[in-house]
Every structure is written in C-alpha cells, then in structure tokens.
Image (cartoon, rainbow, N blue to C red; front, side, top):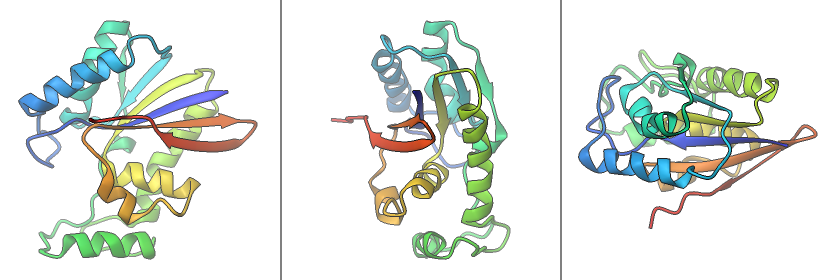
Length: 181
C-alpha cells in the first residue's frame, strides 16, 4: 500500500510566492514535525513557495530527508486581476473546470500539474510520501478522486491541514487526518 500525505501549508503572511510563515505558522510547522515524528516517511516533495517549504523544513531536518521543491505543486492562479467577488469566481471553477479568468489557469490546468506529481509518486518505489502544497490545488486533487469534495470542502480546510491518500491495487481513498484543535 502506498501512503501519500498531502499537506496544506501552515499560516502565512500572505498569498505571494515569497510570503513567509507567521509566528503562529512557524509553531504549526513544529507541530507538523511532532505529528510525523513516528511516521515512516520516504520522501518529501513541496511547492517551491516559501510558506510551503517553511512548513515542512522542521520535519525534513528532523528525519534527515531532503525536501524536493516542485513548481507543479505551487498554488493555483485564479487570475492576475484582483476581483472583489473572487470567492464566487473560485466556486464557479469547481463547477466548470475549463473556466479561466484573466491571467489565470483553469481547474483542469491546475489539476494536470498536481496530478502529474501524484502519478509520479504512485509509480515511484517510495511508499510513504509527503506532498506539501496549497489549498485550492489540494482540493482539486481530492475532487478528482471524489467529486463530493468541492468548493464547500475547500472552505473548511485549515492551515495546516493533512489528508492521507492510500493507494492499493489502483484504488485511491482519502481521509482527513489533521485535528487542528
């Protein structure tokens, strides 16, 4: 059985590529380290965004595992325009996966990116892998396995959040394993 832990990054100062974790986010990164202290991990792959890397650095250092940075795990760009109704627009992209806004990528395009990483992990010899990414793109991957996981579930994600995806004999199942309380 293959276990893929998909993690949404800890609390950050902003949405930009170079946004760092807040002081609370740095504490959460230590909580992630402690959460995985006794869990076998073979590989860690992270979005190259600073907040994602900072979220998993304590665990990588603790376990002596190099963090592989992969741009395909970067956040989905909804648009380069600053829409006041961006939540409505994001919701629309869960309904119409080919919909794009100015300067943005469709859900299908973003899903293709994260799915290519996911498939490489499934086909790799590593059995226990962590993928560190962002909420919207994480939701698209989970939605591709269960179409009931959509916009409403995206809204319930926390920073950080962890879902465990298990792959056995081609069957993929997932469940939320992070308890932020």
